[in-house]
Length: 380
Picture 1 (cartoon, rainbow, N blue to C red):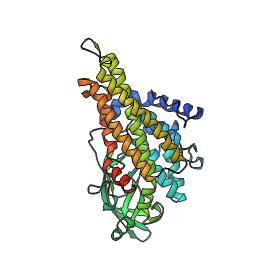
Picture 2 (picture 1 turned 90 degrees about the horizontal axis):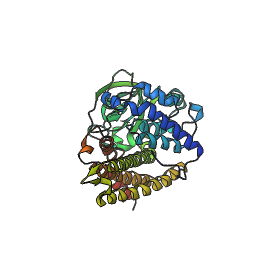
Picture 3 (picture 1 turned 135 degrees about the horizontal axis):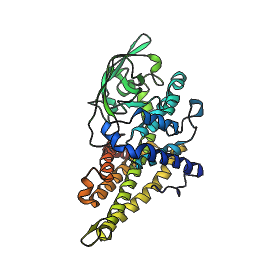
Picture 4 (picture 1 turned 90 degrees about the vertical axis):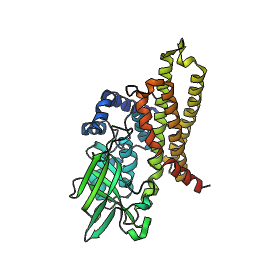
């Protein structure tokens, strides 16, 4: 169990909300993890139950059906559900897609979709990555051509989280390709539009219960009112919201690292080797001591970063630092914890195997570690 009661961020309201999240995980997630992983996606009923429990977009304003809380409550959902081994589907919905609609969409789109995001009736995805454009969003080739009062969209996306379940897809398109990044727009596409097609549910190394898909757009016609914000301002919107996305990934990584450490503590204190507990070997204690120190630093840093984010002060460079450090530390922790399990760590029946394989992607999406270092380096 996560020990976060001593955080300066959280009060009694937060602790009560955390208990709600823990009870939800114990009731709706933990008994069904293998089932959800085998299915390759979360069932609709799971989303609806999460909405009923108040776990979807808890920071949504009350006027759109939300609880009107701040990002600290999103953080609690992230911490607890990641620790319980939920894939990153909820964090994508809560922390990544929601801000684009809330901050930039028309009032009509907000009224239509935001309340459904809170209840789980509308599952969201954001389609940035393409077969030839990953971290480099300027390389996007999906186009949106104006035709009267509509836009006609053609192209494809890949590695899209929530791709099989999504009811709406916020799609990065080139509205004026000749302008490069300055000709990028963000357009909402409903999944029932003619010409929209989902490809296969991709076979991934980890995050098995997250539906991650290819998406295809073949002359998909949407009204111009589906443009999020202003035409050709999409790249600016994407950059403006990256700080929260990367902070969210840092949070997931820290929670996963904590789970890996806790699994290693439990296993090594229980397992015997050469006549004594694995925990009693100096190498084991030194490895765990090193991880404990880094986890302590990590949680303190995240408290600082979340507090800055809530005040609107977390910079793009600071978020890049957080994303880089916490994802790399997470991988170190998960790999060390698996090693301490010995051969058992390579068996999928042990939780550490899931934590380890689910961790690897966080050093890639939201901007690779290499891109984070490049961004940090430019600010020096």
